[in-house]
Image 1 (cartoon, one colour):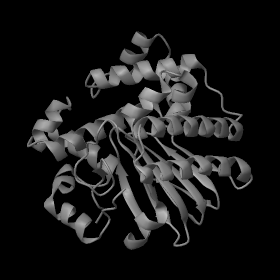
Image 2: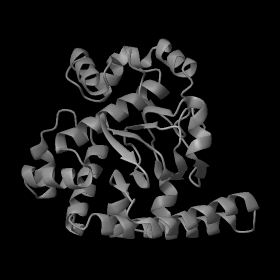
Image 3: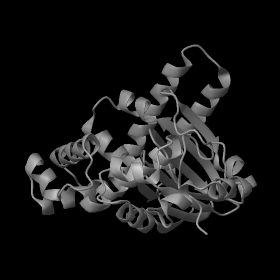
Image 4: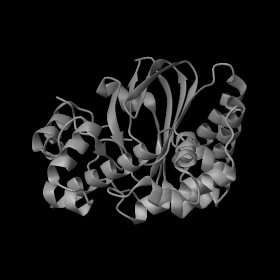
Length: 303
């Protein structure tokens, strides 16, 4: 039986909200060893995560697809993206978790940084040791600052974080020179997501979005594939699934009420849609047996 996909503030904690000034840095070894090196699929609202893998190997699961990695790697996971891991026992590195509020604050509407930081990425850096070591210098400085309790700690950490993001940006540009997206494409995507989040998109035709944005269905699909890595239809489906999960986890609404809240034509259609996307029914997702299964199998990591 599949385990329920959870929305965590930090992985394993039932609450899905975090403070606006949240920054957390922890070693992969200390977080995963006691849990058999398995991170089951989950997602975070309002939280970005960056993995800096110095050694070891494993699989990165994103949208139910697995990619293997080994050696030196960097992984970028923006907010609201389903992901999981299987690490080898010799994996060394760090996980940096940062609230979306801080990311927005320090990036300050820089379109190129926004574009790069909002794409799920697994980047192999085995041939870029010097550049990766430069990034690790920033990580080590952040660790030192966490332990020092110095004056202006938050400001200093945010400055280090901006420096780190710029370093990551340069490395992603270097490693993916063949991928170029214009600021106009990013603007199209942001406008599309703004429309999706401001309306209930269940019964809206994709033409409704494209006519408002001013581009064709094919063009919008290319934009979504370039920036989100999935089709326009999948972007909408992912949004609806995340919304339904939040309603099931944080309200007393019945499954029927949630279906109607999200403007599904009928409850049975919503249940079929949810099961197709998640792997089990809404009732199974919400059931206490799944919550107990999560706790009993020790997947509640504290990071």
